[in-house]
Each structure stands twice: as structure tokens, then as C-alpha cells.
Amino acid sequence: MSEVTVRKQKIKKDTVRIRLILFGSLALLLLLCSIFSDYLTPYDPYLQDLGNAKAPPSAAHLFGTDRYGRDMLSRVIVGSRTSIYSTLLLVGIVTALGTAVGVFCGWHGKWIDTVLMRISDMFLAFPGLVFAMAVAGVLGGGLQNAIIALAAISWPKYARIARSQTLAQKETPWLKAALLSGSGTWKILFKHVLPNIIGPILVTSMLDIGTMMMELAGLSFLGLGAKPPTAEWGSMMSDTRSLLTTRPWVTLAPGFAIFVSVMIFNLLGDTIRDYADPKSRRR
Image (tube, rainbow, N blue to C red; front, side):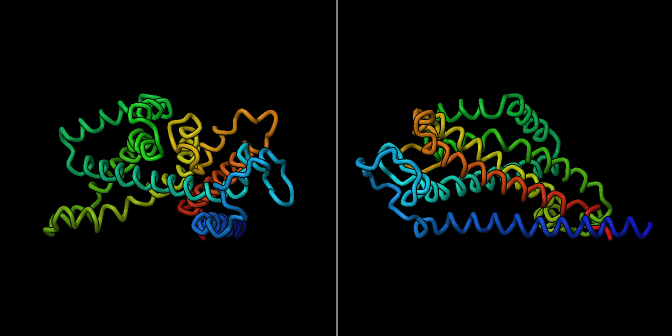
């Protein structure tokens, strides 16, 4: 390998590390802001002041006020807790559920593998958000039911990844040696299989955070997620969409928050994918 190639690979590796630190810090800052949102709001996000309704952005109200006179900056800050942590909970559920199903199918195989994979094919055959709308509508709406609906349509992707990785691990010599040594099934799965397949799954889950956040906000926007007066970004946009042409700041404030959050998590997911690529870690 030439010296020029080595130097380029080192520069690429250093760039990926800098991006990882930068976007990781921004994501951590976003999470900390949502945790301490109650202490960061300049006003009570649920306090109504009809005498100051629909006020434009100013020094007193940076994002203006809504139709009830509530400070939009305070509502956006408080809404970060509902939107971000609901998304993280959703991603955690589908990652755990899909991984468990995939590992089970890949390890045991036979008829149970065929049945579960055909079920996953059925879920993948429908447009994701449309299917989630149908499930959420049947369940009656609400943030909890929106999370359940999105989890019901999102687990097959993780199941497919976990299954393919498990099948690949079953053919490795070291895993066959572990089986011959008399190790139990649970020990092999948790000590040998999961640690070796978790990388691609975690990368996929990081890349899905932004998508899940938009889908959750989309269900809330359609009235199938969080309900007013709960401060949740999608619900806030839905509640104020009639003011978009006359008081655009009321609707654009939560939309801007969604844009920034999705961008940060997507960039972090892309960086983690690049960092996990063995080519980026070569010297």
C-alpha cells in the first residue's frame, strides 16, 4: 500500500472521528435539553393569555404565541421530551422485538422460521405509514397507540437483519466449536451470537431514529397520535395548520424543531455507519 493511500485513509479516519464527536455531542445536547425542558422554558407552556394571542416573534416571545396566547418557544422546548423520548422508546421496542424474532428464526429454523418470515413479508408488503394509520385508527389514536402501530409495522426489517446475521454466524467454525463444547443454547446466543450481530442492528436503529420521529409526528399531525393540549411537535403543527398562511411562525416553530432533530440524528446515524465500516478504520 502506497504512502499516499495510507495518508488518505488516515485523513478519512480522523474526519469520521471528528464527525462522530460533533454529531454525538449535538445529539447528547438535544437529549439533555429535553430532559431538563421544564427548567429551560421562559414561560409556562400551558398558560393561556388570550390578550396576547397570535403575537408575532419578538424579544419577549422568540417564536411568537399561538391562538391561546401560549409561548411557542416554551411549548417547543417542552414538546421535545414527548417527541424525542417517544421516538427513542419506539426504536428500542422495534429493535428488541425484531432482533429477538430474527435470532429465534435464524437459530431454530424449520417451520417456525417459515411462518414468522411469511408474516414479516405480509407486513413489508403494505406501505408502512398507511398500515400504521390503519392500526392506529383501529386502536383509537393516542400517543401510546401510535407507538404500538409503528412498532407493529417496523419490526420485520430488524428481524430480517438479525436472521441473516444469525444464519451466517451458525456456519462459523468457532460457533460450531462452542456447540461441540456442550454450551447451552442461551449461553451461545447471548455470549457468542448477539455480540457478533449487534453492530449492523444498532447502526440500522440509529439511522431509523429520524424516520421514526417523522412518522410519529405524521400520525400526531393526522390526529392519530398525541392529543392537544399535550405539547408534541406533530400535534402542535396539526393544531395550528389553519394559521399557516396568516401566522406562519406558529406552525413553523415545531416544524423547525423536527427538522433540526431529524437532521442531527440522521447525520449521527450516517457517521456511526461510516465508523463501523472496517474500511474507515484501516491504517
